[in-house]
Amino acid sequence: MVKNRLVALREKLSPAGIDGLLITRPENRRYMTGFTGSAGVVVVTADDACFITDFRYVEQAAYQAPEFTVIKHEVKIADTLRAVAEKAGIKKLGFEKDVITYKQHETFSSALPGIELVPTEGIVETLRTVKDEHEIDYIRRAEAIGDAAFSHILDIIKPGMTEIDVALEIEWFMRKSGAEGIGFEVIIASGERGAMPHGVASSKKLAEGELIVMDFGAVYQGYRGDMTRTVSLGKASPEQRRIYDIVLQAQEAALQGILPGKTGKEIDGLARKVIEEAGYGENFGHGLGHGVGLAVHEEPRLSVTAAEELRPGMVVTVEPGIYLPGFLGVRIEDLVVVSESGIMNLTSSPKELIEL
Ligand code: ZN
Ligand code: ZN
Image (cartoon, rainbow, N blue to C red; front, side, top):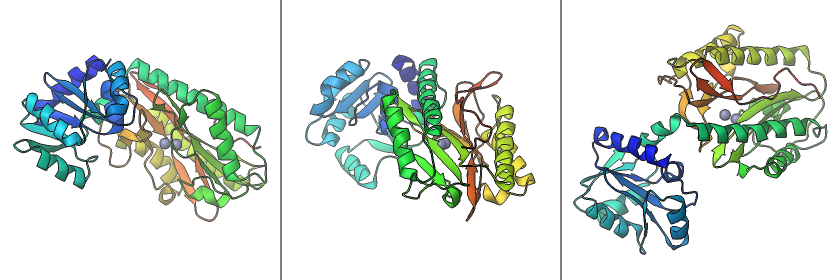
């Protein structure tokens, strides 16, 4: 697995105008090496693959990243990096420009005289967009834990509970069900708070007659799930139901339209058209979806600007929403794998409006 990834990465070095890449983004480090710890940098050239880490992780790295030469760094990582770069004969060292801070850049440039530091973007991220069968299996399991948590929470939710109560119950259930953790802060947004697309759970109490937006995901083997369901506490009003149905219709349109070769923009457009035609275009102010893997938000995007074509093995969310300030929010989110013939939906929770 890691071997194939190294081959794929090495093919990208010379087109990027570099003879080595310094990898510092934690998800990229894990993807390229298999190392699950929280510190270390990776240098890959045509012939070398080095993992530089500190005393705490030397053993773990040797065990988890056997394809890499593991090097314990001295007090300053930059000094060890210089030794590695000089030994590998690197003249142009690429770095991840959206990860390295200004200060780190200063440190590395002064520690690496004679080596040109070249800003790069998205090299490993692009490799990560198409998942292999193991990765898809991990994401499927993470999402299954989310589905189980949703079904569990339906028995628990009642008026008077706070949003935080609901979030904690979901977190606890996911951990008990085998999740390593939560993929992101659980979003529970009830009633008017639903109009905040990222309304993290608050101390607000749930009340009869409210719609509740619940967005959460488990982590399994480092991979994330991500799902949203909106339920009604008590009987939904005709207006609430009408908005819900528009969002559901928009989501179905997008799910049915996904095919390899379509762009993220085209798929976003399928959902957006349904919502715009219903008169709520202004109230769907975010992109339709995003890639999910080791990070909860990664490439590719499904949005008005996403020109990239979808390919089999990409894993994306499809999550249209309508947000009406002072009234409600509705969002429905599934996680799907792009397949040759369309999609494989990893989210199995029901989507008809549930009235609790
Ligand atoms: Zn989500
Ligand atoms: Zn999402």
